[in-house]
Image: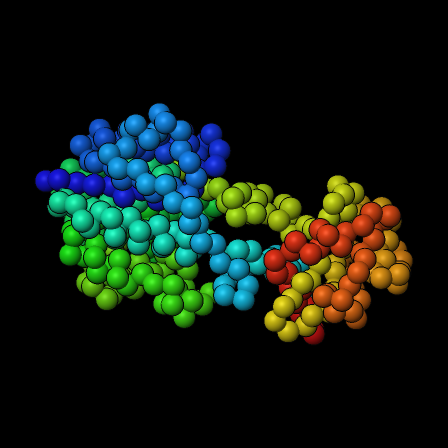
Length: 314
């Protein structure tokens, strides 16, 4: 049977490029042709490995007010919410574009997959057995005891179902589901809509848990992700809420006894207390200056996408 792997990519560093190159070689070893779509120019040695290579300038990350990704960290009565650009649609967009091109070719099985898929015995078994119309699950790279309900890393489809899934993927549907359904949740929809089973026995593994290109950092557990500070002497988190409370608010923590002084448009907040919520009472869009220990922050704060601070008793 003729088989084609449709590989979505965003490879901006050597680790990612090495993973892509290795993945392509693994597919080739299984006698599977390879089609790669990339919003970044790839090196010639990788392009030469592909049967089909397509470069696109499109990498549609979504921002407010369309859709954002929400991460949170709680301490005592305060919860910090960091919202970043949503990259889920970018992944679905790649799947749709790959399917649009691939469906014009004469293949029996199409594998919707990603550049960092671990092609282990679990994957090889399905490929060697010519399994089609199957959705797999994926292990949480942060918690090996948690298995996500569906994955976009390895989906085997015949042409009929490839086209059905392609047509189901629309920006309108993605936005209509809001933050209640992540990109992988759409695979569950495809299972329900088109009768494609989800394998409940095993799962796939992605080799790289890397969100750097989306302004995300690995070590958010150390609160670095929830730190808007320009200094290593303290951490501070600014509220920038376009939806409801537009007042500039902030929380300081992990100063380790150091004095932190904040001045907003000439109004001083003195020596800050850790994990106390401060409210400037000034609309974030009207703030002209934010000085912390003598350093101007206004340009830095303007680059923040969307932050929220929720107080338990508020």
